[in-house]
Image 1 (tube, chains in turn blue, brown):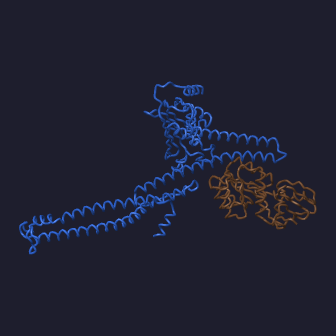
Image 2 (cartoon, each protein chain N blue to C red):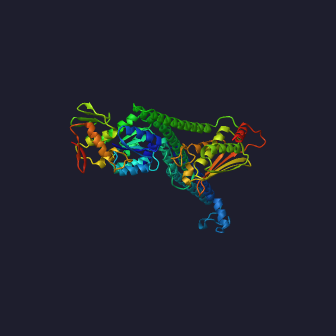
Length: 415
Length: 218
């Protein structure tokens, strides 16, 4: 026991809460014990009072009235010297009994207080053991070691709740760090690969002293294509960073106009008529940064076209519903597993790595959506494809239309 | 020397293959992990240049499998993650060497040659046979001090014959070591190359034919 206490003493800081709890237990016990014993003592004293005893015995019919002799054959007539002596002896006996009672009570109180202090120390230790476990885990956890959990077993009490909350926080931290690590690793991969391509192309071309013009041109074209790719990647990363910061002037934006603009633009550029595009664009006024919202809408529609089946469908719908505006983009395509769906908005996640792109599109969408206080919902229909719903706060009607809407309208009439 | 380049980035793979072929190596390409595994199971490659982040079967898995099934194949891992942790992880999976992207192409070639030499440790960096001296890294051949110009395939055939130190090398083996997967194994390319090689090496003849078996240095 002593060894265990010594070990505990070394294991952590001075167990002040344990000590305080123990003292508290002891004091409470001492106090209630003292009150209880005082009551017992007062009652005993009251009951041993001869007048009281007599009146009670009389009530019970066990003794004759005061005139009759009290102690049977040892009765004395009141007032006689014998009676006085007897009274004195009784008083003496009563005082002795009360004194004895007092001593024994105090002794018992002392012993029980000591026992209760000991028990209190043990109980406090037991109750605080989970706290020590939580402290030890918290101390072990570091950035490299976020997989550690307390996993406190036992009844669902306050300490279990604390441990579970702590575990939950560790889980969220772990996920956040993991996603950051993934981001850094992916960004470095995506940036180093084009560098490697350019470096190899140039090295291989230059290593041949007799390289022909055609070969050198091929190298130049490869490098240019790779530089284009780098530019797209850097633009995507900057857009992601900008949308996360979301600083800039806000304006009134009509999502339906943005969507119409993007569809006209992308249809001409990306797929031609391969994908059947259906639109249902009702005015959907919201407030935000025009360029970010434009990129969000463009990314969604671009994704819908890019990850579609040949001859597939794309449905774009905007609508105002009460306090919110909604943009829905639904497209056909391969069936997406639920587990994949969750990771789609993480940067550099691509369903099909053989296709072009960096996997930043939906991350930017989520980021823009978050920055504008909106909600993003992804669902995968059982027959394949993806359904994305963006809900943003609506701009109150009657506000003056602005530049972005005007621009998209002209773009539409031109095309 | 036969090399498999397992790299999913098409442009990078093509550039590497072009450069290595000019160094006289026979190069095959695999755009994903499963194809890399299949090819490594069929052909005995001297060196496997393996991108760690391959789609399909991950590069780590390919590395482990090839290390288990083809202990003689040198594995050079390419990776975009250049941190020490990745290096340690890659090497502990059985890779022989590790190169972070972007790399200098000359370094890649030097490392591939070093790996191939390690696979047959008896061979010195420069091969000798009588008055013939062949330096694979410099791609230089001299006979009695006089330089001889050889085409890539001729050079590779001669290098293979000299590396086998007088043992007979079959035509099939030459096809496997020197030509890549696009070569029809029933052509007479080996015979034609040997003929040109003999002519360029001059007299007295050094490359012997073992009838019905193959060729050796005599």
